[in-house]
Amino acid sequence: MAGKPKFAVFASGSGSNFQAIHDAIEAGQLSGTISLVVSDKPEAFVLVRAKTAGIQTLAVKPTSFSSKEAFELHVLQKLKELEVEWIVLAGYMRLIGTVLLEAYPSKIINIHPSLLPAFPGKDAIGQAMEHGVKVTGVTVHYVDAGMDTGPILAQAAVDVVDGDKEQTKERIHSIEHELYTKTLQKLWSL
Image (tube, rainbow, N blue to C red):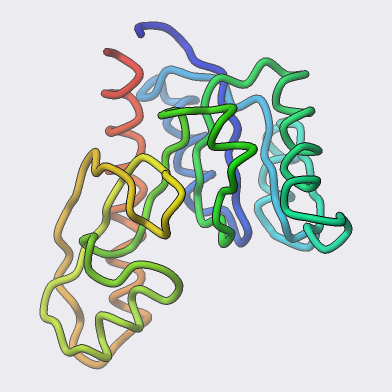
């Protein structure tokens, strides 16, 4: 699938992975167009980053809808309107439901701060440190109905900084930013 796919980035927080993806596109290291940034948290800094970059945003609280399906149908309507081909999760802290999974089969990608299948779900770095591992990592994977259970596309190991969660997080972020863009480029070059 050579070309420049149109994709949406879903994020719930500061948007450092969004920024790395955007920067890679600007530098010519990643082919693609970010058509939309979706956040389930209207106060998320990723929305500021997207607006600064001139990218359309959609900030919607899932609790404003009667169900997860209604929330996802609202998001899906915007994705279809913008002809979005792929969904890239970048620190999106919600499980993707049936509506989006069926609309984008094998077209939703996630990045997770551990060497899956170890430490799925929230606070993977904290989980790794609590278990006393010396090496954790980063995983890029397809999204399925489970929590961080989809087929793995790429992984990279990261040494844990003993007793220092913040330094470990910084190491992971630097690897995430590089691994995600390289993996997306490879995937979209097929």
